[in-house]
Length: 267
Image (tube, rainbow, N blue to C red; front, side, top):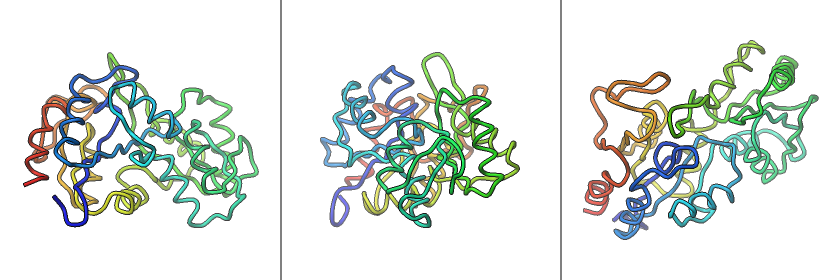
């Protein structure tokens, strides 16, 4: 156990707990085993689309009880980043889902659909279209601050992968001629929220070495890689390979890794 409280297991969601709306086998059992050992489990997602209450509700339907205090999303990180420099009431053109709108409102920022805007936030949403691309890129060219919730190119769903926030951000970046600030894993806004909320000792569990593994490095924590999402020994199209050398924990899913994580974090 860590001084001052339990170590935290910071779990990704897409590819670790679920794929789309389908639970990943043994994930709920793995979470239960970690908690039974006295470890705190947090859920740190680069998917900014859903409000926190929806994330908590979905976890519950997957057999994983959780509270809003257990959840960190890239929407929260993007809003936190903007709130450091924008005043309450600032207009933020939101090319993203309701999770971003909720997070902005919590910081007193106003989500809008069209210019003028002080900032533009681009995150995952399924109704991204040409008109939205035009509005977002025009606002950035006009001087709005450009923030990406995250740069994950894909998200895992049953049967394959779908375009992620990074794919949408790339379109806005190309059309605007600007590079975004990135708020989600593994960037400093997410690192700061995790340290503030969960402490200084833990492990990151994820399916994407480029973000989850990099977050572990940024935190100075071990990385536990599950192969239930976008990573495989031979990288699938749009996915990632197992790093060489591999991280300290690699397994088919969270349930398989839970015993080793309990041993490492409680001895």
